[in-house]
Length: 152
Image 1 (cartoon, rainbow, N blue to C red):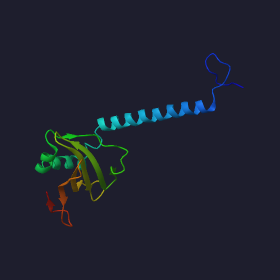
Image 2 (image 1 turned 60 degrees about the horizontal axis):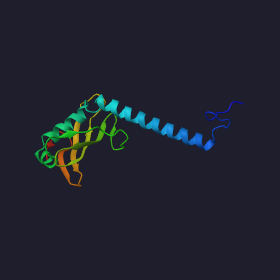
Image 3 (image 1 turned 90 degrees about the vertical axis):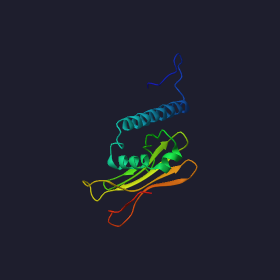
Image 4 (image 1 turned 45 degrees about the vertical axis):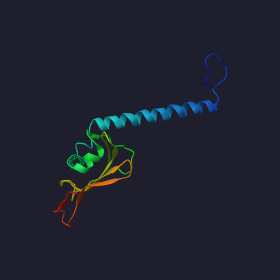
């Protein structure tokens, strides 16, 4: 039977050492793969090309109270892929976009929807939650038919 051996030794590697080695190896590998996937998808701007993302960022950029609270310049950061609050399906999109400025940082919460798979996205609600817990409503769709738009 062939055994793994320490270099220069006749003894095989103990089971505990093998388990520890493989655990560290696989955990490190998983971390590297996660990092690479996060960077690749972020660099491809997967979400930032989507209309639901663009509309929300435009609303934030044109909202004076949010701009004042964050401070110039406005920085939009990468979405966290493992965050369960970032969810997109055929007719609904909910995102939590990290944003920052010179004065503060926070999360831009976005809820967007559309009537069907090939219809245009529209914003339902956008609000900014600052690090200190303050919430600033940026956009809210009002009216049952979705025609009436209220910019807060």
